Image 1: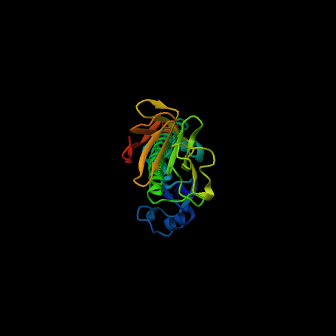
Image 2: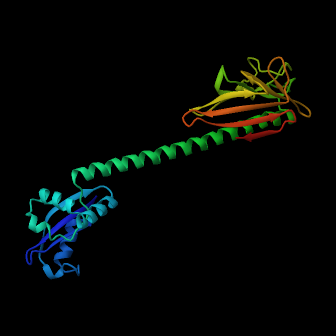
Image 3: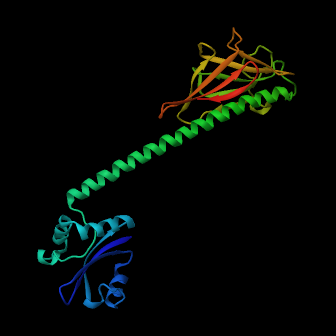
Length: 269
């Protein structure tokens, strides 16, 4: 804790206001003559103190008591001292009730703005990392095909791929083995024990759009070895390009991952 304290001298009608982490120790120091500004008016008695959980608040209170008449008058009421005594104060940072309410309101507003900005920045960073992982997982499927990775003991006929569906799977995507060579994901082609994966997106992030020149509900991107050849397939058409758009809900910000028929995978704004 941090304290603002008021001392009165038993001689000379002198007053002193200060701040400290230990007002009892400071009182002893004042009465032992260790403070040049107070040694000539010993002994001192403690007549009032306030406790704060932050040093800067105690310092602010001390400063205001020394320079703000309203704060001094408010302190007079709290300490039960006559007004003539308070006019001679040399001290620190007090608040009237109105000032305290205004100060608390300002602190609350500033804290809210800081937290909002921090939250927004944090969510944006999370979205960027999610897009990076998505791009990395597509490249992983590509490398599986290039390296002839087996699925359940044999190389899948159509290689490996990534499945995206913004309607049925808005919060995840699938790395699968195209076991029948139809260039699309079928049930049973993403068994974890055989090398398939279902990757969940972070909370608040979803697949917002799949675009190949027009918006699609779903798309499968497969890599057919040995080249591997890239297929961007929606069940009836093969495309040259696909954009997977991720949306961060709270900040309403997006990030794209683009795949083209050359097999190039890139992150875009």
